[in-house]
Amino acid sequence: MAKIGVQAMMLKEDFATRGVFETLREVAEIGFSAVEISQIPMSTENVDELARARGELGIEIAALSAALTTPAGMPGESLVADFDKIVADARRLGATMVRMGMLPFDAMSSLDAVLAFCDASEEMAHRLTAEGIGLYYHNHHIEFAKYDGRYLLDIIADRAPSLGLEIDVHWVQRGGLDPVRTLAKYGDRVAMVHLKDYRIGQLPPEAFEALARADVAAFMAAFAGVVQFAEVGEGNLDFASIIPESERIGAKYLLVEQDELYGRTALECLQTSHDNIVELGFGALL
Image 1 (spheres, helix red, strand yellow):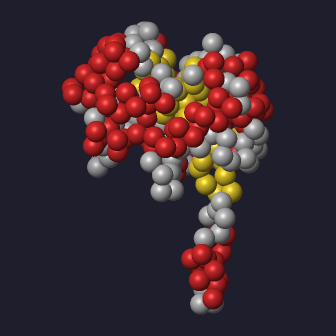
Image 2 (tube, rainbow, N blue to C red):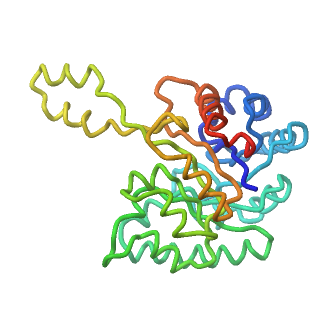
């Protein structure tokens, strides 16, 4: 059975100010019992607190995150430079999946650069498989650009056949495709799904202030920027269909994520998502 958990990227400020264990205790009190770890330092202290949360709170560590390589000046561990540590952390935390959160910036420059990334990822997937760990790739919208009539995500999937997928339904929608059909298309290649809603917000007062100044460019920028991230159930995505399709294809974890919070706290947003998930009838997956 799939389990609905949390993408802990949205908790990184809470982790930094209140600590990993205390933050996850509040997450557990809301009603979530699984987290995917991303964008937090995997220091000895943080790994210890994750292990404590797993042991004392019953929090499952769905996956760890790591880049294939880390660009100069960027924080975080990479599979190339920190392979042994990442494997050790995964074993200690009971995680059998590592996910790469996005296409490397330099790989976005050309199709050849993407293919080189795919080849290196395929090799890394084999190394991790030998350690009992799967490697997964998380999409954004850029993967739905077309090259000779083919979506970039299809090219990545074909070029790196040992690489699993983590489908983010918000970014699928932003890329112009239907999330349910996309989940069905990739089927059992998908082990994780990001539950992130897609909301069309209202134009802010500042847009009309710009219009009154005859600043049409600023008004149009606001007009184009009304697409928002949202709590599950607070936007326009059909989670009543997305969640059952995720279950049908065999996804292991469905992870609530919200990239921007618009003045709310992460825990407030998670409470809203949790309540809406229960209201939709999926409380048994929490």
